[in-house]
Image 1 (cartoon, one colour):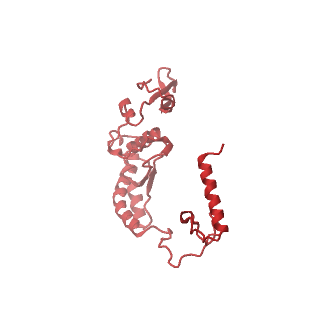
Image 2: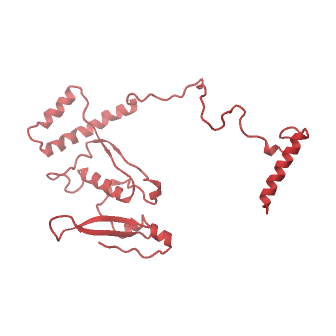
Image 3: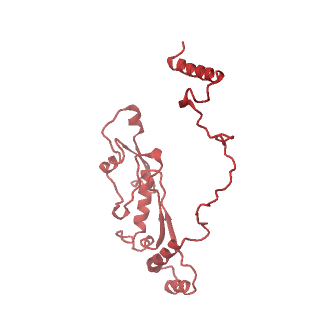
Length: 239
């Protein structure tokens, strides 16, 4: 049994064939069916070599930094240099006069070491890890400038990069963009604002020689099962 849509297609093809053989101008009888492909595209969709346009695009060759970035770096160095000196002095490397060393670099005209930090994406856990590192590097975090801590690296950093929105299949995860107010903890209510009907799944194990010291070996928020089964329940937590 031929469908109605198939019959319409056959009728149009038959009409086109009749119009062509009867001497009708191409497209005169059925102008809506005129060919839409350009006549100078013999290769169809296959990539082909074409001549360059007479007016070349104004794209700067990235062999050097742009003028704007170079000017910005000079201003940024005024902030990162004291922060780097303060951090290295506090680190107490031993046997190295940090002030003399850094001043010697500047005096000799060589480039001051510049720090760049890249934060990974991928999901809510990656956001937590990245934000935790930023908080540890920030000298404004309580306790970050104590002995052995890394507070001050953020202030000595020139470049900081990270995704604004992570891998799309992981939606509705979104990246934390305000690190200045980030706390190294979150509650189920905060979690539920990101994942609807999520679940905390945690496996506890002994991570040290102390049998009384539990270590979380797996921590994950899941929502896929609830979506597949349509069984939306009140989120539960196991710690």
